Length: 159
Ligand code: DQA
Image (cartoon, rainbow, N blue to C red; front, side, top):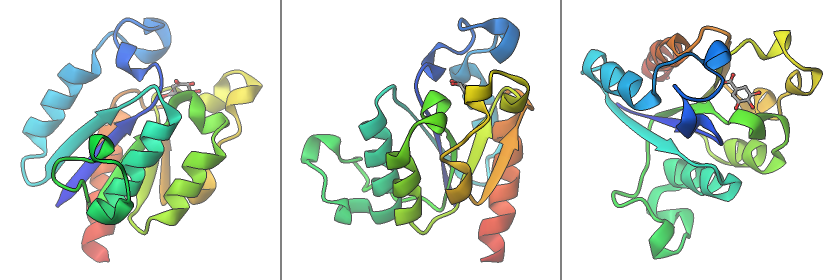
């Protein structure tokens, strides 16, 4: 089973960005731990600060080599996976394009937020991702990614 974690803008700065909200661990260290723990599945990680690159990666996850991307944008293996854990960062609150890309693919996408967005500024209360997501995990810190993977594994096995 292949599960892809996608992190959106500014999440490359985890560990250094607003540690009071997002913690002091880097995602790279956390991801290495996750890979060790989740040895029964193949875990991949993609981060981008660019909305279109996230849309491209979702297309590849769903359609592989049929995604009609230019060679430079193509994942070397075609990039298809069985499920996705997505923290779209601030694009959560703005991106109709990412919403549409999730709707365009048939694999389950779990939306994750490290912080409890509903306790924060009002502009973080609306998500364009939620109506397209198979599930949502909010406010558990980095542990939310682990919870999302556990839920996804069961969801995929039941399919
Ligand atoms: C976030 C919450 C978003 O509102 C914010 O823009 C982020 C991170 C979270 O994980 O808590 O970049 O998605």
